[in-house]
Length: 175
Image: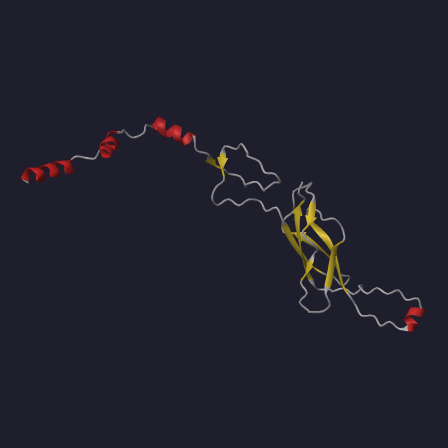
């Protein structure tokens, strides 16, 4: 019994094979550390690129930092309608020169008055800095026989909504 206790004590005092191997392995040399460091990519010092249609694998030897923020591809803008029902919405930041744009739906008026529905359209193609907009709402017209016989031209969508804020979003055209 005593011999068994001594044998157990000896076995407990001898390091396990894994401990023995790790304690015999020398620490890595400076050359080994430099070689490992060379396989890691360096942090990038530029703004990450915006997404592109189709994507690409890339060949940069730098990595994107965890706090980097890529360029936003969409832009928003807003403007307030004049008495003529027009305004020009400027993008939050200009698109790069040569970018072909598409509006994401029609311009959206913030109709807080609860009046007639407001309709808006872009009056020209969007540019890299903004887009021109015209809005209107329907108006009531009293139609009488006298008005008809006087050859009156009726435009049921002529009324505008001065002071209404309009929002619009644009994206670069996909290829």
